[in-house]
Length: 286
Image 1: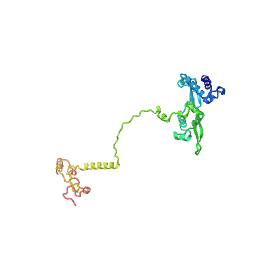
Image 2: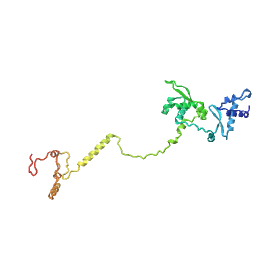
Image 3: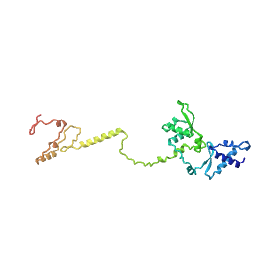
Image 4: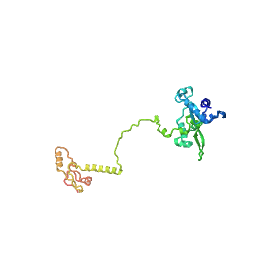
């Protein structure tokens, strides 16, 4: 048979079938008298695909064979023919399906370990009812967990001929989730305090600052006294005569002079022991 004679037969068979048909199944439509080989069928399929250029349908080869389907460009209008809304799948179901597709064969505990959450039994049941996944075996470990893998119906639903047509994981990682997009405005740097690296140096610095403040406080002599030049001697500081004269004059003017302002206690022992002589006595009882 010629190619022009094969095209109407193959086109009608594909439109009448509810499932995709392979080249071998299309070859079974002809007997030995027709003398139709697989090469002629392949040429007729290629000619039918070229005839769909510019039309609302296309001849597409999927995992189960060849089929006519609506083009993606006109699908929004054709979908209005069906009142039933398309099924919406949860993110957990799609993540489970993606792990099975990329890591198959894979067990349920391995899926839970990767996702970090428990896989619901309803998710596995839904995938099996859709005939997207099936049990392909059991792992030889304690408990004999089932191994899941994808089916031809999964490839047909996503217009894939084989698993090799799945997008690589590198392309999926590069996809940016619009929900996770946010403006990352860097905060201005603010230094509260410069802390030393060595804690011993911090303690030494605090000790040094305390000693400096103590020296500055003791370096100023009280009024009426001259500063002692010999810091190592225990000699009492010399009395300033000018301060004593000023105190006496203030007493003559009627104000009570402060004897401690002119003559302070020289030592700690003398300050602790009170004088035995009464006021107005010329001599002190020793």
